[in-house]
Length: 113
Length: 116
Image 1 (cartoon, each protein chain N blue to C red):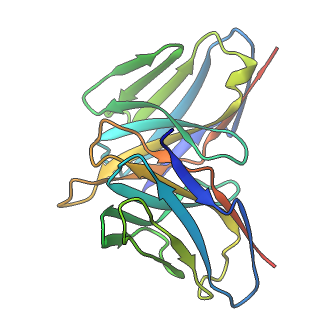
Image 2 (image 1 turned 90 degrees about the vertical axis):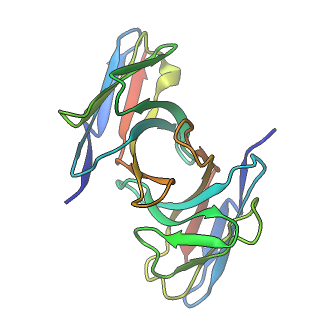
């Protein structure tokens, strides 16, 4: 079955550490996205990518970095520069067209300890 | 400033009734509007998409309307069931300038509870 796999489901980070969240899709979608969700807030866009080796900052990119070396993979690194990283992180993919919605992964919950 | 407001953080209705959720926006010019369902601890699931030149879209028990003059979308679930209980998210698909790729901007969601 096609879909998006995010791992790990739960992640704990110590102060000052960088952590990387994995996102893999087998839907042959060109575009991939990272969103952050906090309680009582809408999803906010961190980074997105339309093609391999190219990506753009979203609305809250500070303290995050991404890479897109393969079409199937779009990992997100939460760096120590991100001052409030505790949140639910969602990866999504889509066709580069507007007849389709996004397909989301099941999310990674990151907690700073 | 740009805003997406989903009226009513929570909506409680009796099974069998029609649930109506509202999405209002300001200072956006969306080409498309989408609705998603999200269950606790899970990623959103795409439900319906409606284009700016469409007034209404239906899918089984779901109906979406889109009024670009009022800057409003209504999302209806007819013959609601307890299994419909979830958070429903409105999302505006806005084209990036000079790009073929749109970006989705999400509202905070409305939590729907359908009681037997």
